[in-house]
Image (cartoon, rainbow, N blue to C red):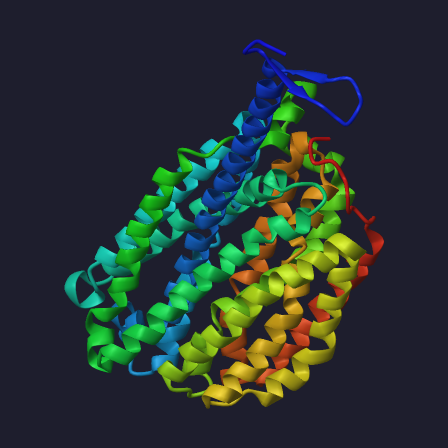
Length: 456
């Protein structure tokens, strides 16, 4: 058959089949469009998760390097007292987190997730730069403390905005069938940030003297963090908006009933999350973020051993996350939560007893704890987002998430160190177990959510 617009295929003795070239080209164009859309979605997801890594890099750097800069802002003869004061400043950064979360919840539900994520990271990066350049107490006196606190408060607002908007965005950009697996990019990004901060500690304490670390070495990770944060701001400007948010926006108007009315309307979910998030916040900040600082200050570990032990445990955690996420996509969200919370109840006491100052005595308990906790961390994004309707999702989760971080996550490092120094290490362990028991009861009352449409 002749002609440039037709292709002929012959099958044995059957009549020739004519396939128009335009149809074939159209099919290829559709495939190319779908491929490009998937590539853009994945790129946007990665850019969103990179910001999460910066948020937790910042937390780890402040907590892990506290033993080195504590005396620069709180000069005292007792290093434990100076360290506790610095951890209080760490906790103060969370005071502004509910404000940031509430602001982000309102704006993200009304105007989209992307603009909030860009603004949050820019503010956080500026806070890191301010800490890196802050004069010490010996230079300007008490004003140095106020500058440090102001920088942490600004970062508190930024991290509140970041945690809510990125938490929602990550789940909404994941495919429904493998939502837990793809949205576990969030805790993987979180863990990468923790590892980056810990790696800085391991490397700097290996190449710099103790005197140099106290004098100026502690500023290096904050300078690098500020540059890293501003780089991600540029990347995030090229993200696409959440497809689930756009679909929901097309189907229904934003529920402009007022922030507190929206929260009250979904009060049952809010109450359950207020009982669940204290466990997840406490676990995040004791098992990962501040573990090396605790080992150095309260157990007497060598800083290099503490940082390398933490890196070993965090690497194991990183590989465990996708494995547990696939279990969640197969067996459901509550399955993972039950295993994770039960592991705290059963293992917290023996793991605390196993802690010691050597590298292995830190690495083994921390690794075991994080391997089991990965069950919860891998499915948290999917589970929480599936519980709440799209049009009010960021608003409804802003209160329980920020309150969990403020009242439990931010105070966990301080309470753990204080109870170890003045009461008993097992006092904090009992407190952690109690939170896990309450959280497990709350989880069992919630419905299974696997497979829900996040555009609804």
